Figure 1 (cartoon, rainbow, N blue to C red):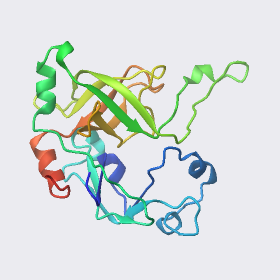
Figure 2 (figure 1 turned 135 degrees about the vertical axis):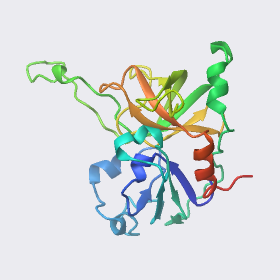
Figure 3 (figure 1 turned 90 degrees about the horizontal axis):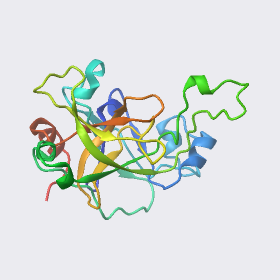
Figure 4 (figure 1 turned 120 degrees about the vertical axis):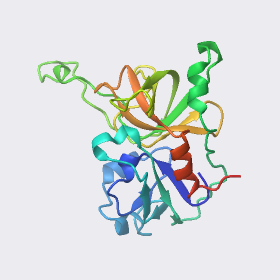
Length: 234
């Protein structure tokens, strides 16, 4: 989000002492090699899969609770230190206060479209499709390749948060046409064709990565106040 601050989900930062970050399009060599076990391994200059950046300054929304993660599911990794000469010149921008309220109030034809980004599963198959006797069985596939999935706004859901706590937004999610899946958590949701980040991937409501996905909205007053403590705003 700026030269030393990375945005993610609260359930990705909660309990973490440190975070290492990679930005490559394809991280499959990293997954296959499993060449890191500690932060020191991840940032070792002799490691061919060395992380691009890291920090021990990992922060989670002060009201985050694992038991109700969907209510405050946002976190940041601040004061990033770079391990190589990688240069980042374009940063995400925070949304305007109440952005999602305006989108819900708009007619469908006037609403924005979105692009979510992550490194999660490519697909997930129901257990009943995994019988060894099934010649066409296809299990979950996890290639760490950067995914960019388009989506449309469906509505709000609260998971018990109450009518006055519309903590997250529901987007279309279809594994056949491109949607988020397990492992994409914390990835940004942009307004399509822009650098404005309006949410972070929080969870899916279907184990096979179909149907819909929940993204945590970051346009509320308390979230913007939390994020602006760490993110430079022009």
